[in-house]
Length: 313
Image 1 (spheres, rainbow, N blue to C red):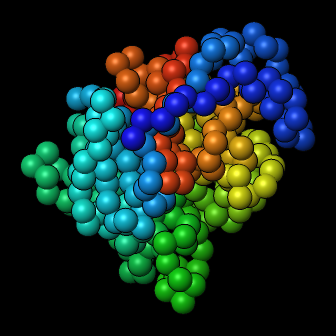
Image 2 (image 1 turned 120 degrees about the vertical axis):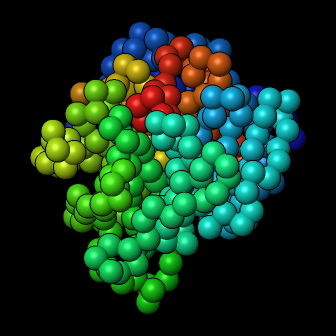
């Protein structure tokens, strides 16, 4: 059901000042107004769901998103029409599109999958060196067709773990699965910079974001702290993230969506009524930010376009 819009942009400068992470420089109001108009509002599109995640905009003009405990991927179309895209769905978490527009899903049933154009679901990865993955969480596709995903343990019990670590992986079109990093505590949201020379990864336990250099062979190096996102965890943690065409990084965090410049400077924050889990660019010009937040989904218009899934990340 469509609800009344909730003002958001009016809070962004105040929240920047109140919640500025240590080590981040605040920027001028001009930087914020370039991203969001002062009268922009967060609009609730639907609620009454269980736990929403993994939004991705399909170029045919609809939004797909996951409801993990409901084991469902939903389809939302303009006019606030909500329908079931797939059920059961392997308790899908993160979703994106590959270079051919096929749905790539990180599933809590310990699989990375691809939905073929005929609707068939292909399992791309479920084991590393013979051991079952934990519970693939979020996913991004590189321009060479390789798929990067995170694998924390949120979808399984401790006694079900086989690997003994929580990794960042790359799946290549030839089927090879490579472990890229296993040093993060709870790797979660994942996104490339527009030139794909940087990979950003959120750590939901440590309340920060890491950034890695992406080498020519696709592996990662020079991992370091990019930004801290402190705040009450019940208001949200670093989870899903996306990048706009200017290279700004949008990451869920306490109180809403935190926006960082490529330098690590905090530009501001979009206040969202419920704890944000993930976000995705969409709409006709990819200037609308769709937001999953616990049992609801929202959207807000922005002035900067995001990177389209299948066209970058």
